Length: 405
Image 1 (cartoon, one colour):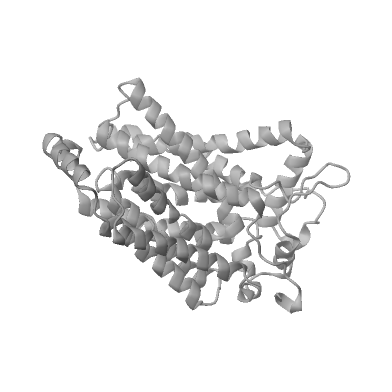
Image 2 (spheres, rainbow, N blue to C red):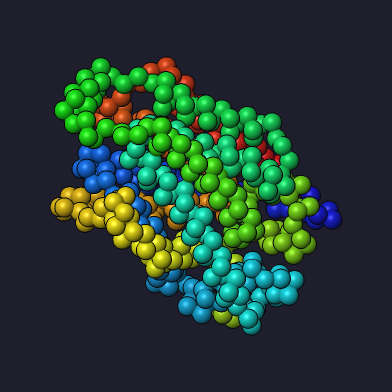
């Protein structure tokens, strides 16, 4: 494969065993977060979507210190090497890369640009997240799940436009089929008769726990889905380090990059330590996106508490702390799974790019289906089986098109 000016580009790869293992963890974390959020708001009756959103997104700040302390205690990296590597990576990304040497930390760190980036990331990530939390208390979880996962389709369309990729029939077909597969699983599969009778009885006995405004919830989810797809593409374009197998497989992308950016992609993304052990550049796997995720959490904690008293005053969302330890524990579970999912997603977004990552997340639908079958909440039907198979096949085709030689 040839990039700009005939330069050889490294063959795209999945990012090693760490990225593949992380992908599996991310899938399970999303399923857990979704089910717990629905449970705490519908079953436990703690309908505080903004408060839950604030707690979960503030918890993101834990992702960076946990990762950083792990590297210091369990690996050969030193504090000086890690700080220097991160500073160099961020400076190269936000400053004029032609002026920054490959092996030395730049003298001036772009502090203002980094703060502005952090604020934009916080806003861009918070809006779809908040809409999702609000929608899941208004509409059925099936609707929210199906519409939310349309962000894969939006991510592809926006990637072609904003990242200057070429239209690819196989990629477009894979994304479209994956979206159809989601609809087939969510709406085409009928639940077992036992589960139907239980659900019907519950709806009669506890009408307050049923979705209150399905249409509004669906519309909020649609806006959130588009915003999330846009966020993924803009994150890849402006915030992530330029080492993306998805883009490396598309030679037209190198017409969009500068010479220095192309050289960065060719360098690969495996962490190395310099001979003097003073700089770890590129940063270790996942450290840079975890820094950005932690920064989002910090800015969320410091600023997004402001709407809470306003929502309470205008009777939009009456503030109330969890009434018991069970509710508190479930919220803690939502926060923990949210940290794992969002940290992992940010890492994969930089390694794999928005198209592969967003379509890969559709596999959560398959996991939810399997869990429902295992626990007796649903039965396998031709529609659900066909939909699950379509999602898996679409993801496999998409990965193949990105990593074929």
